[in-house]
Length: 270
Image (cartoon, rainbow, N blue to C red):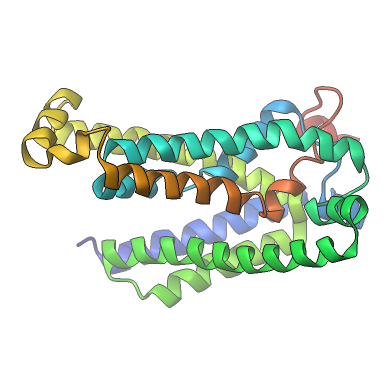
């Protein structure tokens, strides 16, 4: 187990750094409630794509595929990838339609209220609140579990540190701060994926060797026809797609897209 003090120090430095980055980046950019909630027409394609990747994948890309693979095998991993891909496709198709129908909206709930009325609006709000609560708990629990497993850090401490940090910089900088820190997070996740892959190849062996060993020890995990894996994968795919369609943070991110290819730096200079 890694030193608890070292991991605690790294955790504290990380949350302080991200809090500072979010505040510094968004300083002077929030001039209205619309800037805070939607950052309307402030992001180019690249910037928005990165923040969607970070929001959809995030640190879960480091945990979910291995867990799905160990439970349901290769078929579960494939269905998880299909679930994420279908989520991207859903927002590619639905996002522009929602924005075109209600260009001055802020989330899915605004669209539902205008399109389907108050009854459907209240139903959507209720589902969204429940889902966002579960999603928040899941995210805080995931990072807290990792810190506990690595260094024995109490889960409550980690969850409070991460939660308070995000609360501070998003309360100050709104969606702009969230999107910018998302971009940094995605860069770090890509680097961590590279480091993790390198470590696996160093200590476990080549992909061919890993597949061979898995087929020898747990052959059902490499069987695409494994019924248990298919059922688990399908459940995971449906959950990833349907549940995340009620994620209000994702719907907020359809509005920052500019009609021209403006970048965050050009927005700052206006």
